[in-house]
Length: 243
Image (cartoon, rainbow, N blue to C red; front, side, top):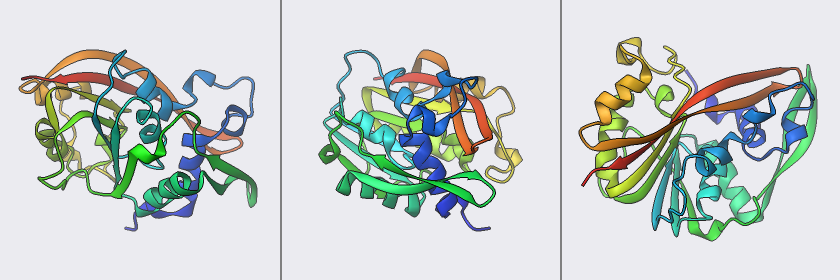
């Protein structure tokens, strides 16, 4: 089955999700505005105050907004995604400061928009690369911060990624992890789903090496077309690597 995250439709959908203005994403006054700008809020609402990590890893970065947000406080950010198309879009914004795209209105109707490099960010601090979260090179770490937003329930073997995390973080380093807990057989074989709640499973898996510092529910909104949206609530957690 072809990877849906290589299609232009999903690249455009995620460019809007990451860079769209309020009215571009949600043209309805009655909509859930608190769910807008999720890729920004996974950093701004989960990153511990006054923390300025030297080196950060954004794994599953999609089209790059969270990586740019991390560049405001991190000296360097390595941003990886499995999708070549997502990485190419992020690199285009980094290089040119903008990227034109189209969003679906209804039927064959579309609207032309442009994704712009977010202000007050430092694109020179960010490096975008294609990579597999379940097959990260041994030489990759360690980092002061790892950010993984809505990644684990899209992996064929999420436990493999979680077991790799201790070697990716320095003692005292922080892990920012979000997931909508949407376990689907098309992405993860059911025998690899948590047998408890996702939060309990994360605590059991990460407890030998990490302390859970904070958890927060983070709503998010993905627009499919002008009259259809996905409203979800991600479980956000902040962990610290034990010495």
